[in-house]
Length: 432
Ligand code: NDP
Ligand code: HSE
Image 1 (cartoon, rainbow, N blue to C red):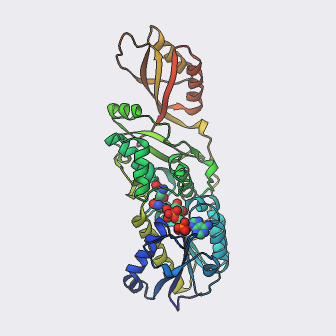
Image 2 (image 1 turned 60 degrees about the vertical axis):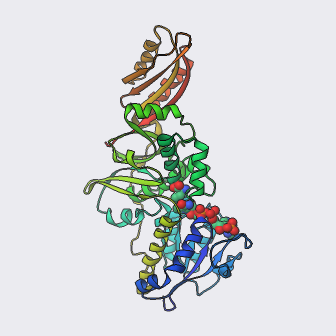
Image 3 (image 1 turned 120 degrees about the horizontal axis):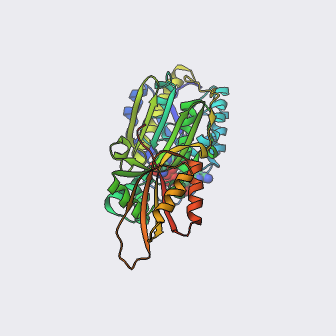
């Protein structure tokens, strides 16, 4: 296939992202064509519902995927349907018919990316997925090329715009969780099913993609330990503020000896760590490589315009391949022997918020449980309560401890007559 006739696009999906891509390619057609040296246009766009009103050229819409996949003139397919299926099936069919693919679909790339890259190689085409992680921030390109000389030491990242928006609103304006989520949805940040954002499934997909590229080891979504933001309480934000921390949904991939830990969960970040200052829909990806040292990628991680920026850039990039008749300029093969480490082996610091009986000896009992489980306490806060209140709230910050030791301590605390409730426990991460 060549670009004699230019870049002829079939668009799969005309929702939040697809309609933005359609508008931008329409509005900037002349400029993009000049940059490419050939014409570019969207020939057909797939939707479910033709009657839904949309701010795009309705004459291009179709409900038949065959109008795109079976059209030999269409040489590039942009997939922005979302979800695993039928997106995965359509991408595989497009590649099998010798079409280049651009996708923003982290679920498909996290679950099937390696197989699709292989299939594309076999078919002499390529699959581009810059928009699948970090919205408009260049990340896939840098991991595949610019950082390729490095052994990656760690990735610490805020890679979900919706949850970062919600956490920022809750921390800075005291906005209630549901209202902050609704705002994120109205702004076009959330996934079609926002539980994927809230429960960190989206961030786990993105981390699986980045960790696979960075450590050259296949990381699948079930390999990523995952906790969402739904169990955070306004009191946790209050204590974080008092103690000099921000609470973020943090994705971590870290080399430890011959292994890699991969996890996504809420974390206390000290205010002087750059990622603690990444707010609203912004994402931040902090990478450490053995040669480059520490690098920070920062920008809008969700939303129609930044995501379209990455998608259209991928189209411009692949057009160079089409023009020159090459594919797979940057072959990726995971060939590392690194093992994926279990969550139980992770060592980190912890914040613990407990409701305890307000009577003599209680603190000593809790300290003993920590000591028995090899957990060293760094600080304790207990606020004065009225003499009538039967329970007090204490907050413990620990030194680094093993996750399995902390879990054993939590079991012992739950069984203790002195502990009424474990309010929360949140891992504490820093710039180390
Ligand atoms: P939307 O739900 O807004 O849009 C999905 C579109 O796909 C709709 O036009 C829908 O048709 C169409 N569609 C879905 N299923 C089918 C089907 N089976 N057959 C035909 N058409 C179908 O999703 P978004 O635009 O928000 O997200 C799209 C993708 O982009 C997702 O993979 C998401 O993860 C990714 N992404 C999103 C970002 C964001 O900021 N929102 C950022 C980066 C990536 P209809 O309109 O008729 O219902
Ligand atoms: N729902 C995703 C987010 C979209 O909020 O980050 C960008 O991938």
